[in-house]
Image 1 (cartoon, rainbow, N blue to C red):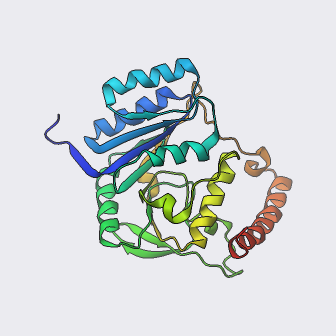
Image 2: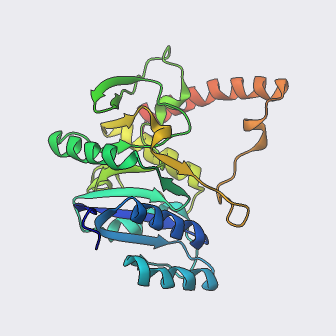
Image 3: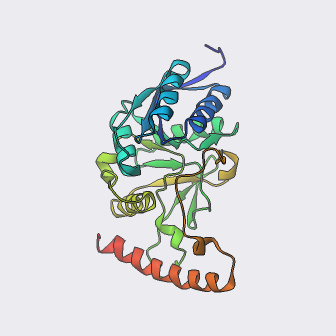
Length: 263
């Protein structure tokens, strides 16, 4: 054991995995190289192919994690639910297997954990996003509180994603407060429904403003992302941009209805 290793005794690292053992190894090794250890590590596998699962089991010898499995793929919601059920510590650091922490993560994770210990109303601290959360209020230590604004003039659709599946620290009682992840549906809809539940049940979260400093998201050609998005949503074509603008306004109305009518 490295004498400089920092062990977070009250935290379980929860990693969701599916057919990407190389990515899993890279993530675990990255924490090891940063001299970070946790009271426990849980890897929740979503029915990977047998040859892939064998590689994951081999990694247990080096990284000493608990592996929870399922005989068939049941989707993101089931994978997170069974992984969270296995956690036995007060706090959970949730990371999907295609992420990798940067050196700056160490100090800011310490800060996030202390902030959550000091503020019993905090439910989660987010470390990464594709885009900054649109409505923020200064909180401290580089974090800002995410403020959900229900008003129609607060028309950035990203406001509904107070919760996200990107790397975050949360209380391990998360499922008791916000409900279990819906199962048997697409991963992006699973994420969205948890985000709506988080808003409806008064969740309080903080967001690290310089989020690009803390994690890489790495997808190789050997192990590409298992999440896909419609091409028109990412196209820079003028017609596609116009369609997207209309779609986002429709989405804003739909999401508002979902929040207030508890759909």
